[in-house]
Amino acid sequence: MLQAAEAPPTGPVPEHWDAVVRDIVEPLAGKVDRTGRFPREGVHALADAGVLGLLSSPAYGGPGGDLRQAAAVVGRLAGACGSTAMVLLMHYAAVTVIEAHGDDDVRGAVAAGRHLSTLAFSERGSRSHFWAPVGTAVPDGADAVRLDAHKSWVTAAGEADSYVWSSRPLHADGAMTLWLVPGGSAGLETHGDYDGFGLRGNASSPVTADGVSVPRSAMLGADGAGLAIALELVLPCFLTLNAAFCLGVADALLELTARHLRDTRLEHLDGTLAQQPVARRQYAALRLRADAARALLDDTLTALEAGRPDAALRTLQVKALAAETAAETADGAMRLCGGSAFRRELGVERRFRDALAPRVMAPTTEALYDLCGRAGLGLPLFEGAK
Figure 1 (cartoon, rainbow, N blue to C red):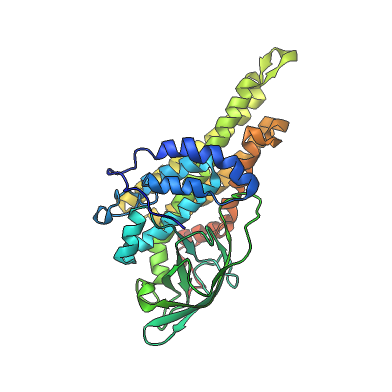
Figure 2: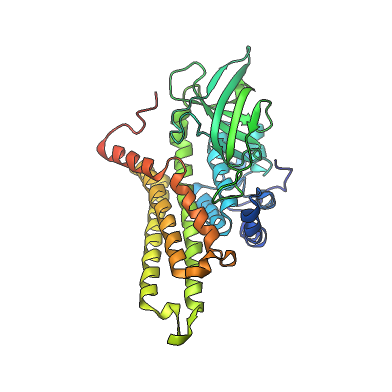
């Protein structure tokens, strides 16, 4: 949980956030990965630098940043520490809803860097089909609601101050309703420490709600409007920032690979690996793929900013392309760096593991291909949402 932070700096982007990444987040990244420990020091430092409140309105003390700026921050963080970047990514996705539908106190706390939020969408009963929650919301007296659910994976589980929580509607028709659930609510339980292959410090664990009581005022938006809110606010932010995350990891891998190729000599040939045509071609192919995905990310951000008709399709495409690009870049970096890549000190193997995660984060690459196909063929995106 976050403590009081300094007032965020003025201006569209906090000026000293990059120094926090360089001086605090990056030096701790290896330890966070080895121990699987939540990166509290980095998150607190980012909060103090105003980064948690980047998307907050100036009316509440925030800098009024936009999605393009958030993508730059997430991408830079991802290259340094994937776990910290994922925590911030999920916070920003949750903040899109809080900014639109949250109360003044929470919005002010987010802007001041005193509140870390996250998404709690995916469930054990519907897995990556986030648009079809099976968790319930029922009246609990005149002014309260009881929430029951088995959330399968929640980033910053047990660490966040709040969860943007999905459930079946309370009374209305529709696919789901959203709630802001305080992290310390009675009946809310995090199950086990995360011990995963990659993103080892992002505290992604199952969370259950067993009779969690929240006031009706905790509803974010209208009853039954949760899917519309998710599609309008959460999904564009999540998919775009996920793409930025992927490309941040890919860029870090390419930088490490280039350094290895330039610095490693083949004494019997009296030259470096970079002077070998096969290695150059393989590196160039990886660089080209990453640059192409970055061009699509830039176009996606432009489409969202301009309200272009293809903006929704672009957000689906960009996460799919960037996730596959990151995974392929990671595989290529391991091959080009050879046995050196298996040693922790080079930094390739950590980023290799982090790069594989976005493929399976909902919506998965396979799900996104299906959604892109549906969009291109004029079919409903979410036929399971009722």
